[in-house]
Length: 329
Image (cartoon, rainbow, N blue to C red; front, side, top):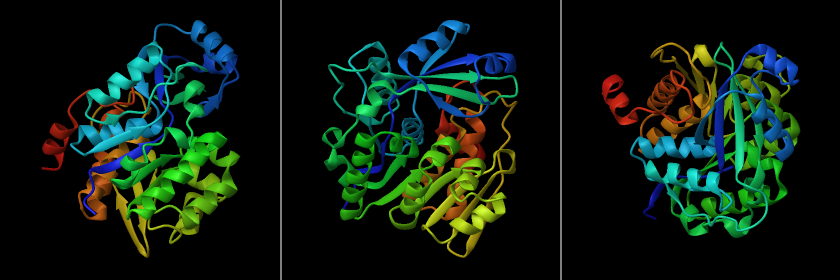
């Protein structure tokens, strides 16, 4: 079947508020550096009132990846729920403006659009406090299953597993993709998310996922391993491909018995690691759905990640196509 989309993603539709903060602020608010904590609307408002000026930009893990795919020239679609409010309008405008299709109807009642306060410390680490709001109301009725069926690859974020409704949507979409010859990719999203759903994620990796994306902390948490090497040995062969990122050590791609070591790109001073994993997945999946060999997929992922960490925010501010032309030809 001829596919109309390269990648369709399902995830939390979130507007990020990026703020620079110091370690003392994290300590004063009992926040663990480098992790994501779920907060309620009251906590979100209280934290927001405690920080300085912020940069508002559309985010959400899978949405960032799909925006990256679209910026690279891929045919991308995104499914996620927002409310009919100001932040919901910002989210919809931003993802459509880069060329991704987003047609999930905005909720007319209920919680407000999700937002994530991202505290960026001087070492470029990001600590996230997320109010999931309307995004957790995503359910199978919100799915555009025709769009899913028309995708070469369905991309899902692990954060969806925090909501029973979203989990049901996740499974329905994966079944539709597989039934129409598509592949399924999963990002583990966050080590704490893995801790919450370890058994379910292991089952997903073993039987329902073709491509797994995880960073060093996430894959180690998934298998309760004592080292990255041990975790890599555990995941090898459980899915078609496992792309494991290791920050300044690059990434490791496991493809059956084959192993591809991909070096990182250093394109400037490290400013903010928000979105690095999301853009790695964007580059990887764009190359993959264009039929490139696995090492080339890793290189494009590494290049996109290397660019986004040189700026504040999770969506590239420059042209990814020009970046590719400059570094990969």
